[in-house]
Structure formats: C-alpha cells, structure tokens
Image 1 (cartoon, rainbow, N blue to C red):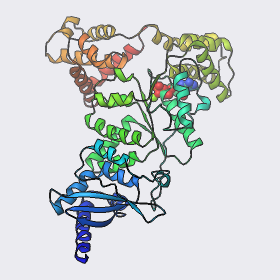
Image 2 (image 1 turned 45 degrees about the vertical axis):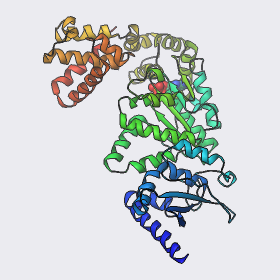
Image 3 (image 1 turned 90 degrees about the horizontal axis):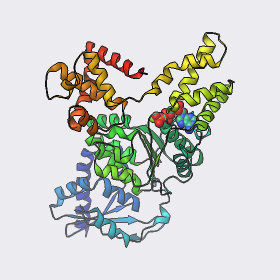
Image 4 (image 1 turned 60 degrees about the vertical axis):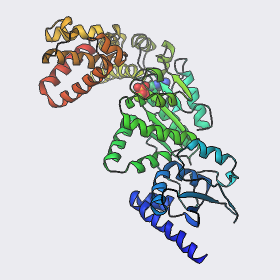
Length: 477
Ligand code: ADP
Ligand code: MG
C-alpha cells in the first residue's frame, strides 16, 4: 500500500515536471497545480480535479499534453481516470474517462451518465481559488443603442442585438452574424451590443476586437510561442465581438485557431457576435467548416437606409451637436447621398464646416456646392469594366493586352492594378474579378492584391500611379 502511494505520487510529480516545461507558469498553476493524484492500478493513473468544468477544460485543452506526459512515465498502454471532487461533500464521483481519448464524441456520451454537480458550478469560469479574469472590453462608449437609429433597413439586426444584450448566450442568435456594405452601422451595432451587455450584466467579460487585430495578435503569439495563452485568453470571454471577420479570408492558420475558440465558446454558452462586409455564402477563401459556424445562429443584414431613416440619422446628429439646420437642407442631403451612413455624416460635417469656417450662411446653395463631390460619387457605380478602361487610358494600353496571357512587365502590372481596384471598389468576388480580367482564377487575383499592397510600400512610382488612379475612380461622375 505504502509503496503504491509513493509510486503514484512519484509518477504524477514526474508528469508535472514534464508539463511544467511545456506550458506557461500561469496556466500550470491554474490547471495543474490543483490536481491531486489519488491512485495507480494496472497502469491506470487516477487524478482528482476540483470540478466537472475543470475536467472538461483539461480534456479540451490539455489532453495531448497529459497523454504524452503519462505515456512517457507509464508506457503506451497507460490510462488516465479523473475523479471529480464534489463541492461541500467528501464523496466522489468516478467518471472513469479513459486516456488516450481522441474521440471527443465518445467522451461526451460517457459524460451523460455522470452524476454531474451542476448546482455547484453556477458560473463555470469561477473556479474555487481562482479569481475571475477581468478584461477591458475595448468598447467605444460613443457607439451605443441610444444613438443608433432604427429603421426597416436595420430592424432585424438591431432587435436581435438587443435581444442578445439582455440574454447573451441564451438566445438562438448565437452567433449573431451581422453583414452589410461599408458604412451602414455594423461596427456601431456591434459596439452597442457590447455596451448594453456591460450595462445589464457587469460581471460578464465582454471583448470587442477587430479581425485584423485578432490576426495580428495571433501571428505574434505564434512567433513568441504563446499560442496556448492566446487561445486560453479568448476562451475565457463571455461575449466575444469580432468585427470584420471577412478578413479571415486566406488566413489559414488563424482560421484554425478561430474555429477552436469559436467551438469552445459556443459549447460553453458564451455569446459570439460577428460582423462582415459579405454574407456567409459570399465570403471567399475561408474553410467551409468555419463558414458553416457563421450560419449556426442568425445572419442579419443591414441595407442602405431609406429616406426617412437618413433624415432621422441626420437630425439625431444635429441634436447631439446642438446645431440647427433648415429641413430643406436635410432633405437635400438625405435624397442625394445614396448609400452610406458614413458619407451621410461626412456630407453634413462638410456643410457645417464650410459654413462655420467661411462665415457663410447655411443655405441650400452652399449645401449643393459643398456636396458636389459626394453626389458625383454616387452618380455612377464603379464597375470592373470601368476600372479596366480607366487603367487602359492611364497607361495608354489596350483592353486586349490586359485580357491577354502576356507576361510583359508593364501589362502584368496594369492587370494587377485592375484586379486590385476591382476588389477594392466593387462587390465582385475574387473568382468573378479573375474571370472578367483575363480569365484568371481567384488565387491570381488574391496574389495581385498582395503584390499591389507590397509595391505601394516599396516603389515610389508605383505609389504615384496608385493614388492617381484611386483619385480618378473616386471622383468619376
Ligand atoms: P460599418 O462598420 O458597417 O462600416 P459603422 O458602424 O462604422 O459602419 O457606421 C458608419 C457611421 O455611421 C458611424 O459613424 C456610425 O456611428 C453611423 N451609423 C451607422 N448606423 C447608424 C444608425 N443606425 N444610427 C446612427 N448612426 C449610425
Ligand atoms: Mg466597421
């Protein structure tokens, strides 16, 4: 008996040495220090963990590490059995979950029969002895529901957002996937949801992050060998808001980690809010299993606002700024700035600035003159054909050269610019851009966009072409 006791403690302590070398100290202290070894029989090591949640966490996150550690000590046939310590009771339950457990499904079904002490684990993130993580939600206090005008253009997304703010993670809107063209209120709404959750449920950990930042942070964690810390941090969030998820396009390894985090949060009843400039089916170069997650909850789009909503948005803004303007001018702006709320606000700001700085009266005429530029922009839609002909004019080449298979440097460059601008200024997919510009595939278009982005940072002449062309596209009318 005595000898056995020494043996399992010894085995576990050697396992811990190995584990310690492979994860950060914080995670080691959080997840491994509280484990108590309780027995070893026929190569089956028995360990006691503080809660059901704790056991699930280990299975989800450290199964591979545990397996390696234990097999190193006890050989390939080694198994692990968990014992969950009941809160307020000395009795134990024996989930007898076997190690090597590669099949998650199998574990789940074994769990079903367990006497799980859910009453003892109200909030699974509050583990006895471990403080709940406190994070800064990174929300913008100015983007709230109070100043988010509702109209038929955004009603579905807005009311779903309000529902989930009241009961994050407990509605069928998980994830809430909000999509629209630019400048129609996705970021504003996503922020408003976060603020409302914080107001109604201050104990919840809310985090707003743009997908660009998420990608950047992940890249950094991969370089610094802190990938696990990155994942664990995100897995502890109750309401995760990721803005502009379409940036996942082409980012294979971030997709993998996003998938893992998403699954974990979803399974644990955390709320996920995603925004995108495309609907799930139109997102390119993102794995199907990730896209399918986007569609699990509710996908809600925001359309361009109708006339009355545009007026309402303008009046609201004037109200906040304490400025009064003749309704005739508001009507003029609302009927002429077509699609985009950001431009609507920009138009109003320009008119006010013109009037203030030039000490002119705020008249309809002033509004008309000031808005010429905005309105021109809405007159004609930018199409791939338009971009191609603009580029041909600019470089004095012919369309058939762009469409040809030639690899001559200046033609290749013109073709790449056409693809880049088509991606930037139209809603066409990479595949259809490729097809229209020289019958290439989507990968060629993606490559073209990357090349242009690289060249604009390194090649002075190229930068000039780029800004010339950009100006021509933006101000064509
Ligand atoms: P997106 O993320 O879709 O590109 P934003 O959320 O950044 O758009 O919105 C663009 C601008 O329009 C922001 O200044 C935002 O506050 C404002 N805005 C968008 N929707 C509304 C709305 N429904 N009511 C009031 N302002 C809005
Ligand atoms: Mg946005």
